[in-house]
Image 1 (cartoon, rainbow, N blue to C red):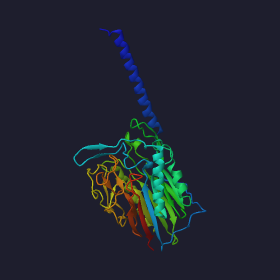
Image 2: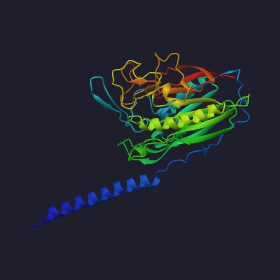
Image 3: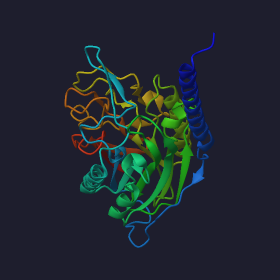
Image 4: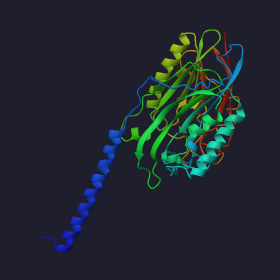
Length: 374
C-alpha cells in the first residue's frame, strides 16, 4: 500500500534533511582528520636574546636567582568562569559540569591578560615561565597574549613553543571553541644559547586528540660561568587524562631528559603546569567537592634519583589550581597545587605559591628562589 502524496512529500523532505546533515557532519569530521597534525619532536626554537637589554650573558654559581611559573588560562578564567571540559562531583554526589567554550568577551581577555602581566612584573623574578598563552584564537577573541607579554618584558630573552594549533572546533554549542593557536613561553634576563621544543606523547584516540593540546615542553640552555649549563624546562602536561596513563608516559619522557642532563653535570630546573598534585596536595585544602577523577599525585619517587619537587613554604595555605566545573568559591570549589618546580640535586631552592585568589586565571603563580651548587 502506497503512502498518500502529502506523506510521501514529507518523507522526502525528512530524507533530504537527513542526507544534508550526514554530509555536513561527515564533511566536518573529514576536515578535522585531514587538518590534524602534530609538530615534530626536536624542533629548534627561535631565541630572541634582546641583545641590547639582556642583563647577563651567563649565570654565576655564587648568586641567587628567582623564577616564576604561571598558567594564564588564555585570559578566560575570571573567578565565575567555568569550562565545558571540566566535570566534578559535589560532596553529596551531585554532578557538576562547566559550560563555556570561549571567554566572556574581548575586554575580559584583555583585562585578565593585563592582570597576569602585572602580577608577574610585581614579583620581579629573573625568569618567568608561562603556559596557555594564546596568539590568535577564537576562544580569546584573537587577543595576542604573546605579543602583550613580550612587549611588557621587552628586555628579556625568550623562546615560544606552540602546543595548541587546532582546526575549528565546532563544540560546545553555542559557544564553539573555534580555531586555536596557543603555546608556552619562557623568558629570562640572561642570554639563552639554544632552545628546543620536545613533543610529549598524547592521547591519539578519537575525538580526544582534537580537544587536547599538542602537549610539549621546551628546553632552554643557559650558560653558567663554571662551564656548565642551566637546563631550564617549561612544561605543560595533559589535563583530561582519567587514570593518568598519558601523563605517566609524558613524565617518563621528561625524566629521561632531566636525568641525562644532570649526568652531564648540568643544572636542571623544570617548571610549569604538571596537571598532577604536587607535594601531597590532593586533599590538602578545604572543599565541598569530591576529588576529581583526573587528579593523581606526582611524588619524588616518580622522578630521577635525587630530583625533587620544591615544596612551597606556604603550601598548606595557598593552592595553585581550582576546578573549573563550578564558579570559584573559597573552601567550596576543589583546589590543589599542580604548578611548581622540579630541581636536580645540585640546585638549592625554596618556593612560594602566590595568592591572587584566582582573579585572572584558574591558576595562581608560583615563585622560586634558587642557587646553583658548585
